[in-house]
Structure formats: C-alpha cells, structure tokens
Image 1 (cartoon, one colour):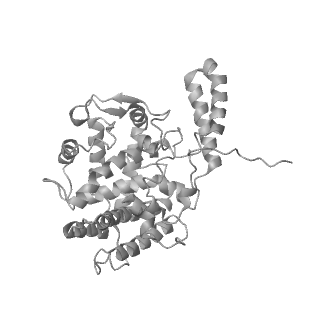
Image 2: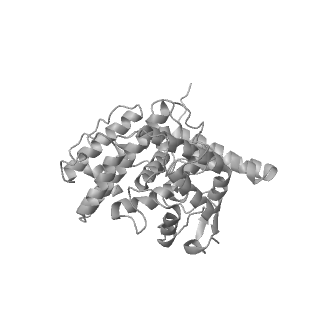
Length: 373
C-alpha cells in the first residue's frame, strides 16, 4: 500500500498549485449550475481543508505572546465563514485582496469620507453584532469579577485591558491545551468582537504611552463623546494603508459605551465554561501587560526613552497584573534591556500557564521580538 504524500505548496499553503487546481476543478463544475454562492461555499471548504493539512506551527512557538503577539500571530487565520481574522491586515505576502474582501468608498462624514473601506466586513458585523455585544459584555463582567468588583464603569486603562482580553480570545482558543480550535473553526461572532476591539485597543494604546489628550485621564472614567471626538479628530479611523474603519458612528459609540458602562445582556455560550472564563481573562490581562512592556522595549530600541512615559507605562502594567515577581515590575529596577527581558520572560511563562501549557523551554532573547518594535 502506498503512502499518501501531500504535494508541495507555495507561499502560505493556500495559494500554491495544488489547492489552485482543486479550486479550479470544483468551481468549473459548479459555478455555472449552482451559481456564485455555491462556488464560494466550495472555495471556503477547500480552503479549510488545505489549512488543516498544512497546520499552524507558529501557534506553538515559545514566547508566542511576546515574539508574535495575539494580534499579529492570528491575522492570517480564518473564522468559520472563511473570513480572515485580520481582514486587510491578514493578506498573504504580496496579495492585494482576498475573495472575502469587498472594497467600497466611504460616505461617512468626517475623516473617513471618500476613502476605501471593507464593505463585506461591515456586513458580517451587522449579522454578528447582537451576539458579539453579548460576548464583549460577558468578558467585561468576568474581568470585573476577576479584579474583585461586581460592576462599575471602566477607566481608560481598564478599557484598554478589556480590549486586549477580547482580542486575545482567538489566540487563547487556538493555543489552549484543552480543546483548542483549529484554523477555520473560530466562531464568526468572536471574530467580529476581535476586529471591533482591535480598533479600540489601537486607539487607546498611544494614550498610555504619550498621555491622554485634554478631557481624558488614564485612571479615570472617560466621557464617551470626548473619546469619540479624539478618535475622529486625530485621524485614528484611518489605517496606515489608507483604509478606514467600516463601522458607522452609532456602532463605534455603542462599542465605546458598552466597554465603559457595560451591557444588560452579559452572557455568551462562546465562552461558557466556568473554569475557562477566568483563565481567558487572566491570559488577556497578562497579554496586556506584555504589550505595555513592549512599548518600553520600543523606546529603548529606538533610543527615545522618556522617563515620564516609562513611569506611566509601568504604572499601567502594575495596574493590569498584580503581585509581580520581577524587580522591574515591582519598581526596584529601571527599564533596561536585561530588566525588560526578565519581566517579559516571566509574563510569557504566566501566559503559558493560563493556557494550560508548560513554560517556554527556550530562553527569551531581545532578537526574538525586536522585529515587533
């Protein structure tokens, strides 16, 4: 009996000659008779098959949260509808578009008018929005329980932590030791929440590093309207590639209000396990601390260290993770490279523990994460 060998593929494994031949054969046999919708369904099925066969080895590398990150490490993964988690940011190298991306020109008022946005992502968000809101409210309630309170408005830095918890869910679900998801199995509701809160996190992170604008304070409850105006006036709806946020103003305000004040319906069966929920929250909090420390590492790498910014970031880290063990996190050591590596390695091991995984075997090196800075 012969042994089946999968033909070699090019690129990321979903665009090489082998999957392309399968796609062409399937599409030519069905597109004429069953229409575009059926052809897209077959395309998605084959894509999921190819992804399963090629695997996702980078998800299991040591110090994943430091060296790749829970955003960058999952951008090219797809949800259970075949959409890239990273949308435009998750395109394979050299690709300009993806079958699931539909570009349109924004008619939103303000900074987004006349610029391209991903209309199909907005359509998915509209379908998923009620359950995505429940998931975000569910994780917000779990976060507050984890810090020992029943309910109250979140401060600006706590809103950033919540955004990191929500955006850490895909990495957590793919990397956990118990019942990990495979590529193509992420619920689209969780993917929608991930994309929304990624935008919130990208907005808030500069405030921790550089200090918030007038009318906002890091450790105070923010005014949602002031926060929205800061995003609009600061051009933060526009990505570095020129694409703009696809969410209407009412949806953006809804997300900010939900994050700060919570929602009435705070339950989601996407994370139903009473044991899993605290682990996810603590994993997200640990990831938030890692990302904050990487801001300090970026300052050291680029020779632009600001003592006030360093103290502001370290203060936020100490707020996010309690009872730190390293000298840097306890305020006993200035932020040097050696101190940062020690603190990041400690947090990396903590993150692995929340996943039910063993501590990283390889030592953490500055060169291992410097490309992220």
